[in-house]
Length: 200
Ligand code: SIN
Ligand code: MN
Image (cartoon, rainbow, N blue to C red):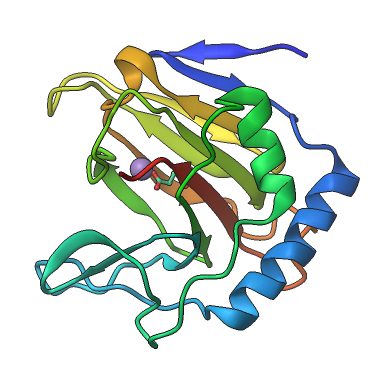
């Protein structure tokens, strides 16, 4: 398989085949049934366009009190377990000695996007972030560790996997837009991105 490298992000195009993508979506349906998607607020009080939920010991949440990890869903229940298929990808590409504590599930409906940001709510940046794309194409923008400067863009397709680690662990990144309806994986359209992280 060809592996691309963009500003230190390791991109594995088509890492997950069509059958495994469909199985992953089924597993995620069970997660979302137990831990429904919600629309987080930024600490500034603006609604994010992405809807999210999590699996694992921790989930990532955001509200007026800030960005953080929490051991329960906003509705009060514990987060469901991370699907085995997701753990398998993590063990293959990141580590077979430590599993992730959190698998954040982001759902991008039509018009959803995510601004440039760093993933920096974790205790130890030596652990990479693993990102899995499912469904519609998403335009990933990659910047720099420092704010500002030039950026590069790359279309992520269903089944693509990205590992953000090493010197690239704190590189700014975001999703400018999705091509709504470009994939038939999700019956209602849209894009799912999973990001797995070691938290503490
Ligand atoms: C994220 O940075 O949390 C999401 C990245 C993506 O959706 O590809
Ligand atoms: Mn991120």
